Image (cartoon, one colour):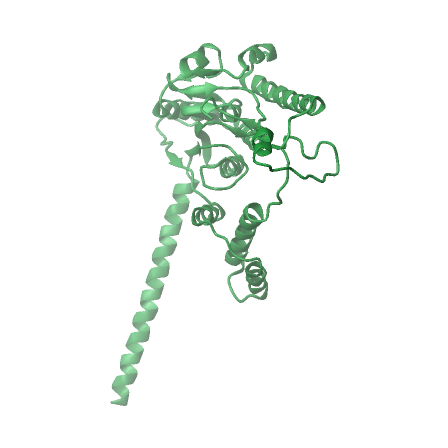
Length: 344
């Protein structure tokens, strides 16, 4: 009886070991196959959707797109990038980050932009240094300009007896306060700030599009253009669909890297890194928890009690979310400069 039990136990162990090695072998084979797919020459599709800001809310958000564009500069198998833009514009800083990333990538490999419903203001800013820009005939683009606005509720608050009390360290610290009118020195200061940003905007567009600065200045009065009008004014290169833009990109990539026609050059939608997926999940879940959790998670990671990479990523992302959303000091700081679309 004892011998039968030993034999049975040995058989179970042998089966377990065989199954384990079989799974590992299959996983290794799948990993190698995936590596072959990722390492072969290809094109990559990246989507920029929604308002442009410094927040990292989704894989199609401005900063996630900016990070991926930067990664692709030195990604040897990627021979060209299709950037699909459907954005009304957004903040100046994030738009500039996108512009620089597209410009640097286009210096190494072809970058073709395909404009969908709209690519206005900051959305156009990001597109301007691409190798080639496609739009549909009815795409809304342009709206080249900068705006800074607020509201004055002083009269309304006076009627209900609400008075503002402000203590500040300088005359401009409560600029754009909704409790009072802007005075002339403040208005002059803000106008100069806008003009400085506007000048940089049109200068970058003129460089990206290889147009004379004065030509761009005449077009950059805030008006919007259809795709057809934008093509007539040389703000975009061609009218066409996303598929036509992909076909053109494939031709540009073959020419740039001397890839023969009989070699396949597929296009793949850009993947999201673990950090970007985690960030998106946290934003969708609207995580809000206390600070002590983060120090505990960090200590556990440091002491080796849990996976360091995983817990550090969670702690960093959650801390960033918490400090960015739940601990902002209230002030009269003016709203950030915007590059809005006509629709906003």
